[in-house]
Image 1 (cartoon, rainbow, N blue to C red):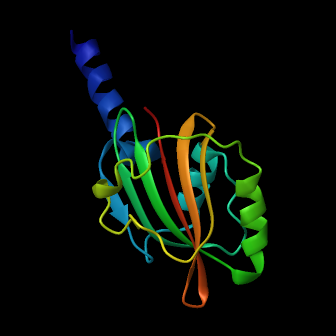
Image 2 (cartoon, helix red, strand yellow):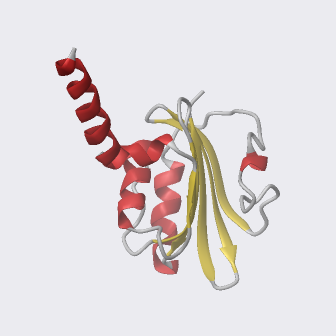
Image 3 (spheres, helix red, strand yellow):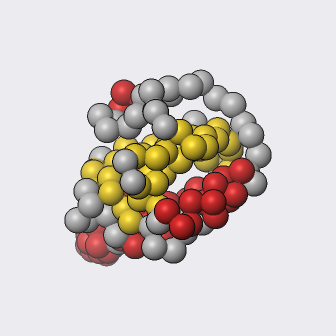
Length: 147
């Protein structure tokens, strides 16, 4: 019996120390905490390569079984055409517009100044993407989720 208790405790300790344990909770990142590791997570999960020089502005993660991710990423102006081409190369896939937009208070429910938008299914995720001109910046809004 002690062996089972020890195994359980060790599993909880090592599972809690895992970098993926954070994904079991709802969390939000801002410009100061949205770094390259989070961009790498987005690339791995969505299958979309974000351009070099991109800067994370906002990130919102809703767990656990069917996770939902919202991201706001600043794209270098000179790389706008590169990210647009990467999004254009994805297959069009439709799903309900405005799906779960109310779950994230900074997600643009009616985006303006849209340069390009895409609804797709890629890498096991439904993806909604908007490349938007905001003042003198290019902003990529990316939402992806499983059902």
